[in-house]
Length: 556
View (cartoon, rainbow, N blue to C red):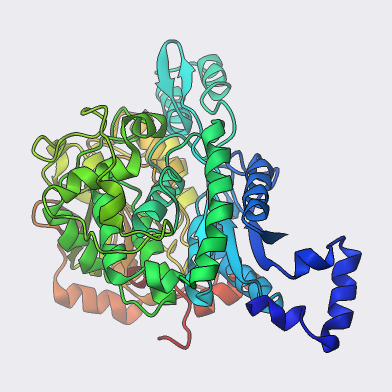
């Protein structure tokens, strides 16, 4: 056993003595020892119940004859960190979480790991650690939040964000907003739409690193606890059979995940996280792979914020495996990929049942013929950028407008709130990339204010930062190279003509090459916004959004 390194032999008597102090019996130490990375805290609604999930995992491990040992990780709620300095630290926490799991699994040579995340950066951070460590692992999340209800309508967190813009525009009173905020998030779980957390939890199933139902079973359902117990039992089987993450999360598995992502219209942040996870396993996953798959995979689930359905609806309709079964009928799923069920994905999805053909539409009756995300490139983004095209009104798939340039999210947000943004504006928010932010902040506040003011179908928002999975409208993020690296976005000026075409997948600044060279000759890189602490170090180490905003390292 791997754990024998810290428990077996006469020379390990001091180690066993310390474990005796923790209350372990000798017979417990003779069993497989399973580390549990539990990200429970009292700061994130999606994590406030994870101690119960963790207890169920422990029960499952013990039922299978193993010994659980729990440790904790950090976690940030993107919704609470949104719109202030806190959001600079969100993406950067992904690497910290990965490193912390690695440190614990090296200091304590567990035989296997159960990873318990639920919200935005915790999920990919733990997945990255699993790939890096390559010891038997299984993931079990905390599950999605139930949808809220307000005046007979379904609501969620994005409804509240957009409500702020409605108040400013005079379409909602402050008292109505107060009522809305009190019922939009009814309890434990990751926010109820197909935002980043739920996108990644669903993709954990498609990747094969989690059991079926991991992404969709609501947080408060008892099925969530049963799933956790099964995960605890299953990790012992994975250890005994020596099945590791790199056996499961292969290039074909990542292609399956991207296929599912395009089918359900997931968060644009998946284009950051999946390449980062793949990188830890020595797999190069490029942006063009997302684009190639998106062109041939139809959009068959219309999930919030682009559509009306939520995770509880998807769970009832057949879940992720229901989507995969529908896609497999057209040969879009690679069926030979191994999963933590110790079965091939093709053998498991064939038993899935689709019970609601509006939530999971037949592949020959999709919501859109192509997938949820598109990669754009052009003179404004030579290395590419990302748009969630299913959230864009087709009336502005071809957009021409005048640049309104802001050097921070705060500047842009103030202009939108004060009515200094108008129809036809191409709002550019720069110096918010991985290095320039630092930390590549989400722009949910300004995009939601645009939607609340009714400008989401007449304006574009372009940034080297990123967007929430809850964003809708012509919102283009991950512009690379970023402004802090001297990318073309750094050279844009108010009044420049911006042309975006989602059909051609282009984004251009209509300024002559000579003029851009002139602007580049006088451009001066701004001083770092944060000059000390973790994010100062992060800015020096992080790479482009086009490569997943990973750290420079020995694999580069």
